[in-house]
Length: 178
Image (cartoon, rainbow, N blue to C red; front, top):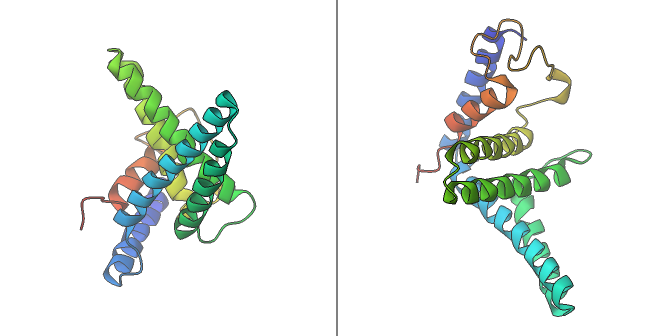
């Protein structure tokens, strides 16, 4: 796929999202809020697990089970149609994005601004991949690596697949639209 085809696909996607918003079929700002909530629920599951394991109190595992059920129910609102491992991949992309973001925040707090920014970029790339996968923007058979940062031989910006994907998600999802 050349650059013109990539731009055309992006424009088609933006138009499709805009049309769905007008028809009230899609509320991406709410879905984005929901995805952040799901990230936090996965994190709460992890904390209940570690607290239960450290204290030996089974009540924490009971709470983990309850939180997991809520997380599954909410994840179904975003991950509606999936094949193979996409459900689990989606959950892990959100969890990894949150953890990498948290490590970046800690680095920032320690005055390691460059390391933090690199981690924030990686966290956003994981988050963008979650959305691309669940909005069916990517097909794994279309992903080909040309060089370190180019999508194809005509790619002039050379931001890489994840960089282009991040730009697309920024354009499509505006959490400030009420």
